[in-house]
Image (cartoon, rainbow, N blue to C red):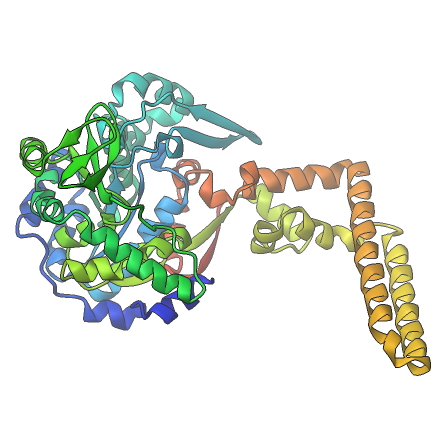
Length: 484
């Protein structure tokens, strides 16, 4: 089901009016001093420290896993959307660093495009939360891979981080801090204690939030949607970190992580000794975020939207309003070679992102000598098939459907053969093939949209105007950023 349609059917809040209605809610009473201490420890720029004052008005929050060099470009697009929305209502833009996430496969790779080749660094990270992974064992490999960029003052500052999540937060401050972005790492020692109360509350009734999720999942299914967060019997929405991070189950008055059993008292003692040991699963993370932060708006990607849509009952359970939801900006960066190739064939970048090689083939078709004649012959055959169907129908009306199917099969097979001819012709033209491969490397690397592979910091390091172009872009919808 389409994301926005699902939101309408569920009555989820969206738009600037809903954002303004949610301004003014107080966050955790300890938020301001804790976040200020965290930012000062990281050496945040003055613009970020000044933005702390806007938290009294409210926050527009977004977040992402702590990827290398800021993660894929969509990280910066999320931050840009949050900052744009926040500025419009006088609130603060907050970036939740997903430091509790232990899916290291999401963050251990760094892909850069250099001299028309994709270079990849893959770090052998342990399966721990990003906030627990020290940067020191990987700093030399990262610096060597980045080459001269490692000496850029912004990157050098980020590489001083002690953990993977701090490296990520520093990178955000280095590139987006002058716009007032406030990174928030829930595993930072200054910020983790803010969650103790809400974790204690969840331990007091550990299956209530799971039941709330399943109730909403049933409603979404009845509307034709596919809920991603259905909980298994006995599953809580809490992870416990011991030698590994494991989901807790609650059965017969006791908790288990699959290795050993715990009483509620034992877990409370663990929590009070170290509040980072217990962390929320996806079914609680946005609610915990909004328990601490004065969240008025929440910027998400399409996949995140689907799981947040399942949490309205959990928000109600905690006495919170669902924040106004916004889909992040989708962006594409065009460097000079890419822009020239697209211009040559009058090909829109978004068409290529959506259809890839098929869009390129359609764009170059008029340039291929002899192809037009074959295409015209196919059109003539289809017209003759249509005339034949009409004659047959006059003779016997019951044959109308079989002749319609015949024409449809002829058209489908003809188009398939035309496309095969195009690909064959393309393979014989070295220049066209070179242009196609170049577009793939720039716009669809690894077969994925550019914004999901290359970090925006790569473009900012290569083009001094990149951050300015992003700041000037719309913060909702789509943006094409032409550089160089």
